[in-house]
Structure formats: structure tokens, C-alpha cells
Amino acid sequence: MKGSVSLEAVPVRRSLFRKYFLVLFTAVIFPMAAGGISDAWFSYRDQRTMLSALLRAETRSAADKIESFLDGIKDQLNSTIRQTRVADTKAQLRLGMLRAMRQAPAIVGFSVVDRAGVERLHVSRIDLNRMEGGSDRSDDPAVVGALSTGTWYGPLTYRDGSDPFMTMALAGFNSIVVAEINLKLIWIVVSEIRVGRSGQAFVVDQAGRLIAHRDISKVLRGTDENTAAALRRLRDAVAAVGGEATRARNAENEPVVTTMASIPSVGWTVFVEQPQAEAFAPLYASLWRTGGLLLAATVFAATLAYWLAGRMTGPIRLLEEGTDKIGAGQFDHRINIATGDELERLAARFNQMAQELAISRDRSERITRLKRFLAPQVAELVENSGDESVLAGQRAEVVTVFCDLRGFTAFSAHAEPEDIMQVLAEYYEALGAIITRHEATLTSFSADGLMVLVNAPVQCAEPALRAVEMAIEMQDAVQRLIPSWRRRGPVLGFGIGLAMGWATVGRVGYESRVDYTAIGHVVNLASRLCSSADDQQILVDHFVADAVGIKFPMTALGTRDLKGFDEQVRVYDVGSRSLGSQFAAIVSNPDS
Image 1 (cartoon, rainbow, N blue to C red):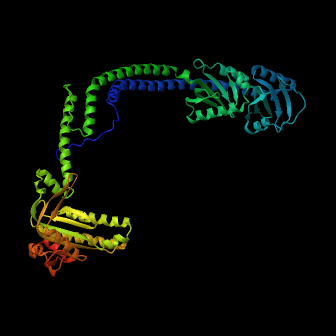
Image 2: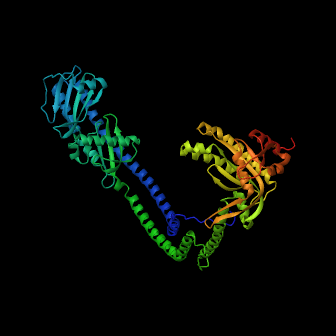
Image 3: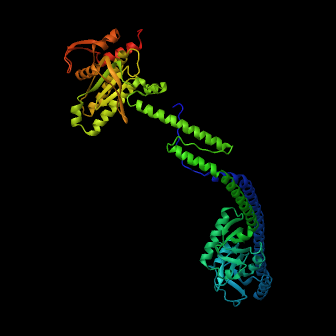
């Protein structure tokens, strides 16, 4: 609609203060935050790389030392096997075994078993020595394992539920040496490992039981299944990342950075761990510094945004109050702002908008009144011309069209309300589009009956021809609807009556309700012709027939007595629906 302005209430999603705050916050904070985050990220990567290298080096060193410890014991077992071949007496063999025990303090006992499984000699630091006896040890797992693999490492055991022990067996040419080893001495290896202030190392077996730990009391409690389960979970977590340094929780459920190395020969795992708080302490300190700077920048940005928003509060409040009044319909309200900047220009635009809205409202109200009885395009035409005098009472030659449904009264008496309203909705939808397209004026409708004027209030060329063409389209449209109506029950028809002549036309009604109508002989005649029309008939008077002339096939029906008329009226039938369709084709292509 030309010249109109639409003003709608828009919900406030974000205040101006918040917008300024976010812009300034982004401008000040984002570079600092990006720099701080990038520094923290690279510092974290560097710290993690360095820590991983340190932990892996310590872990591998501890694993190598433990392997050397086990290799030293294995060398003593090899030496004992060699002595079993050269010693002449058990006493000489015993002396060799005692010498081996002095050289390897971790060995607490030796047993020499022949390949038949008979024990020949047993020397121990904590048990009685056995020089004779020849007990059968053929079913001993150590003997069986050594015979099958050459070197056999037994599982971790705890003597009297305290010190960890392990059995090692080595098979020679004619004998097997079985040694019982106190693993408590591995504590020396792991206790020497220091990573930071509180980093530590420890060793676990395949079942997750502690073999060595800086805190020896934890080793002495190594039979605790809960601790073993926690250590197995820790081993699985580190194995999942390929043994690299990773963050996890240790057996005490403390967050640590840890790595591990395996000792394949015995199935042990060496761990080195450092508490996360200590490992990443430099990174945390950097984050605290960055956070402090960001906090200071946030305070600065918020202060600046508050100051700028405060400078704009007054004019914005006037704008807000003005838009509220304009939105409420007070289009005569004006916003007075004299800041000399964009806000003043904005206020001027609002005042201009209010003026245009007042004009648009008045025009919209006029068009709304006109569209009550005029086609939309006709109403626009009257409004654009700015002259409503055509709607005033006057004499005009018009073509009056009446139409209604045959059998509708009987149908409405028995049908359900929903079916009646559905039929009427389809009926008016079809006829309304045709009336609008032909720029006719719908003056009234009641139930199934319509009254339409052609050539008033806006005149047109050949009104009779336009009215007949419109009537044919209306008849065709309704006839296309009737089959679907009949499938739902009602047996309906449709008749139309047209009359041409002079009538008094104009607006009638009162202030809040106005209609445009026609009064006169021609109106009554069209109504009676409509009442006389059968289904599919379009009846016209002789004035319409004469005006159309040879352009339409007309069937003279003679004269009829019509109610309210003293003389008989000559009546003509425009023809059936198919005839009307044929004529429409002829009119659209006159050269054919």
C-alpha cells in the first residue's frame, strides 16, 4: 500500500547496554583471551612433552635396573648349575651355593633337584638346610616350568602375609636349581627415583599386586584386592595410550600424570607417577596470571560501556516513550530530541512515520468500508481517485444479477449444520472469485442468495455483455460443484436472473454499518427472474437480450406472469452450461 508504514511491537531481546558491553568486551577481551589461551595450550603441550620424556626415562631406567637385578640372580643360578657338574661332594656344592647367596643377598634359599624330580640339596637363610632326604619334587611347578621352558619365574607370594617373594628356577644338563628370592630389595631401586617433590615409582605384577613401592608398608599390604584392582585399571588406562604419559587416578584415587614400562621376562610393570597439581603447577600459575588480566580488562570494558550507555539513556528513553504512544495509536505525538546526531535524525524519522501512519490509517479505514460492497480492485480505484462521490445516491443504468440455489431450503431443513456450512463455503468461494474478477459489486447476500450490480458505482463498457459472461462463469462453476454435493446427500440446483434498467444506487445505512445497494424496478425484475429460473438456467429480460444482440445465442421463452408485475414480461434463456462454454470459446477467439 503506497505511503503506508507498519509499526509493530518488537520484543526487546537485548538492551543497548548489553550490546555495547559485548562489543567492547569482545574488542578488549578477545585478543587477550586468545593470546592467553594459545599460550596456555602451547605451554600445556610443552609441559606434557617434557614431563612425558622425563617419566618415560625414569620408568625405563627403573625397568632396566630391575632386569639387571633379575639377570644377576640368574647368573648365580647358572653358576650353581655349573658347580653341580664339577662338585665331588654335597659339601662342596653347599659351599658354592652359600657363596652365591652372599653375592646375591636377595636369594634366601637354594634347592638342587635332579631331572627326575628328586631333591639333592637345600640351603636356606630362613629354613633348615637339607643335605639328605631326597624328597620328590617332580610335581613342583618350579621344576615342571624349568623343564619345559628352561627358565621359570614364579608368581608373587607373601611370606607370612608380609614380605614379597618370588621363585626362580633354571634347568641345566643334569639338574635344576630352584631359588627363592626376596623382592623387598627392589625397594632400593624404586626409592631412588624422584620426579619433582613428590613423584614416585612402583612395581606391580600381572595381577596388579605391589612388588615394590617407596612406602614399603603398602607393599606389605599388597594382598589388598581393592588396591590390586585399582592398579590394574591404572595399567589399562596407560596401555590405552601406548604407554605415553597420561592423566589418570592412582590406587589412592588421586589425580596423577603417569607412564609405565614392562619387564617381559617376569610380566611385571614399572610405573612412575607425579601428582597433576605438581606436574602442571607452572601452567596453573600462567592461567592465574591470564585470568587476572582478563578480570581487569572486563572491569575496564564494563565501566566504559556503562558510561557510554548512560550518555544515551535520556534520548533513548524519549524514543521508547514515543514509540509506545505511536504504537498505541497516538499518531499526533511528536518526539523532541536535540542532540545533533543520529538520535535526532532517528527521532525525526519517527515523527515522519507517525504522520504517514495517520494518513495510512485513515486510508485503510476508507478502503475497508469500500470493500464491504465493492470488489477489491474497484475499492482501490475509488480510493486512489480520492473521490467517493460515486458512492452517493444517484440514478444509474445498471445490470442487476440475482442467483440462488434450487432446493436449498429443503436441504437446510434436514442437513447437519456442518454440511450446510461446508456447502455455503464452497459456494461463496467459487462465486466470490468470479465476481471479483469481473469487477462487479456485491451488494448483499443472504443464505444462498446473492445480489450483484454491474456498471455501478464504477461504470464499464458493455455492462450487459459483462454481466452475461459473469453469469455463465457462475453457472459453470456451481454446476462443477453440484456432483460433489450430491455425493454427500443434497440434491441442489442453481438458477440466475438478470435485468437491465435504471435504478437509484448509493450508500444506505448508519454510521457504523453502511452498504451499497440499488433500488428500483430493475432490482425486483432480476429477483423474480431468478426465482423463475430452473437449475442450469440463466433468465434475462428483453433489455439485456437486446444489448447483447447477436453476440450471444438467446432462446426466447415468451412472456411470463411474474409476481408484483401487472404486465407479462418477455423472458429469454441464455442457454445451457455447455452452450455458455461454447460461447465463451467463441468470444475468446472471434476469428474462428
